[in-house]
Image: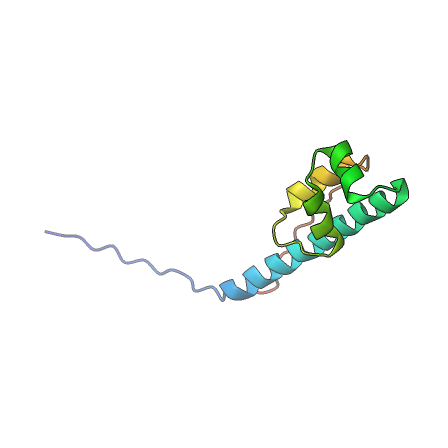
Length: 102
């Protein structure tokens, strides 16, 4: 004899595509801000992409991609690493906000 357990599961109004879009937008903003900091550091130090490569051991082509805002190949942590190698420090703060629908 098989026993069937019936429970009532509350329905949540959750839109996955909307959540993914918000996450992608936040990641894109973070990447742009880090890329801007890298460009500022290169300009401040008067470094060409070849000189930056020699100093940081990051490929010159990567610095060219960053300068032209082609950031698809870069993760946020990789960009943070490049910022650190150029001598800048990063202060990261994370805040959690609760959805009003939750």
